[in-house]
Image (cartoon, rainbow, N blue to C red; front, side):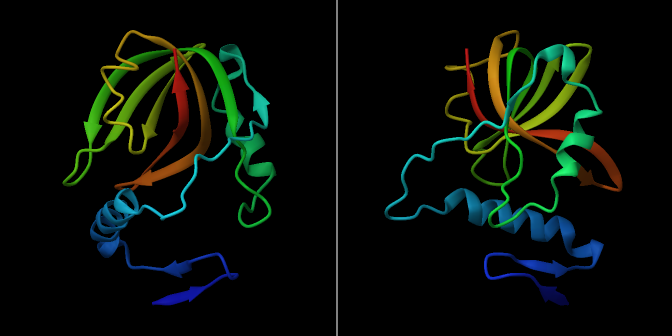
Length: 156
């Protein structure tokens, strides 16, 4: 009902009762979007975070650099030696995304890896130790706040 933002932003407010339907439609559209001249994007890694330093306080560093947007992309981290504890293929219709539970140091981290279902089981599986490139953010779902990683790249 309310909206605003700069030229490359989509700021708006929405009643919480519409959120599940909105999220579902947004993820479906985003997963199908392919631009004609889309090229592989190079990732700029802002910092390497050793597993022992991956703890909930890392979100404080992320939030120091907010607000993110045009000209100020969200921080991108690299952590080596992360263990995949669990893996689940998710998605409304296409089942094209991967939900992961990762362990690094003393902590376990929920993570999502968009459009990576084809790689699951081939390039990575539970019990593998991998290197990840990711963003960290607060996730709000069903009135619960958790810290969640969004995986941008992953390799053994």
